[in-house]
Amino acid sequence: DTGVSQDPRHKITKRGQNVTFRCDPISEHNRLYWYRQTLGQGPEFLTYFQNEAQLEKSRLLSDRFSAERPKGSFSTLEIQRTEQGDSAMYLCASSLVVQADTIYFGEGSWLTVV
Amino acid sequence: GNSVTQMEGPVTLSEEAFLTINCTYTATGYPSLFWYVQYPGEGLQLLLKATKADDKGSNKGFEATYRKETTSFHLEKGSVQVSDSAVYFCALSDPFGKAAGNKLTFGGGTRVLVKP
Image (cartoon, rainbow over all chains, first blue to last red; front, side, top):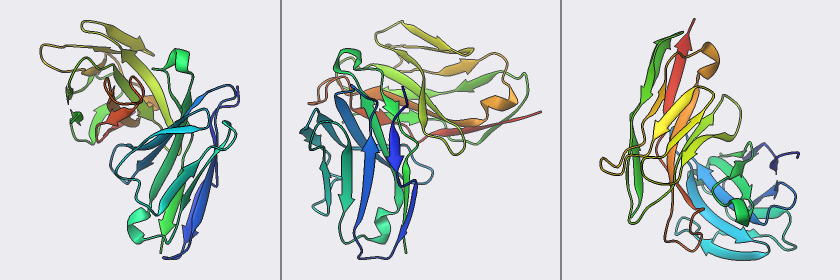
């Protein structure tokens, strides 16, 4: 069990650029979640997948954000035309359907938009 | 909608002191309740959970009891150590969303600093 892995851990980008984050969940975990955490705040739910299907998206996920999990394993979160307000830590988490209340988080990907 | 309110920090304690972090929630239905901990530079780790009223979650000397009548889930530890310095998050799971039982709503976090 290698845990939830996220890449890159840190990203600095200029406003208007696109960025992509990758998440590798714990193997065999069929649920995968994305959360966003700003400084001094608790994480906020963005979206989640069960296998390759994206089952729910928060209203926080504007049309500049897109998430995919094409083969039901790793996932990507892309932010297009980044804005300074996108600066946050993006957390990925995974779980098994049969152990739905036990969710494992990755270490997060820090995004700074300058 | 669902919400979680927890006491603001930072909370500064001496080693071996008693720690309480208050957490109250608002939810429709009967959510599961959680405490997560975030150590410096690390991701969130599940500390403990309780899935129904009057359940007590416990782990690493920490305890919290699901109190439906007061909609609370206060975290306590009898004797803290320097290594307990971290940010603690109270959270609930959404009982009615499409991700029922999984989508987490977090409080704002409480930073705890334990001094030797």
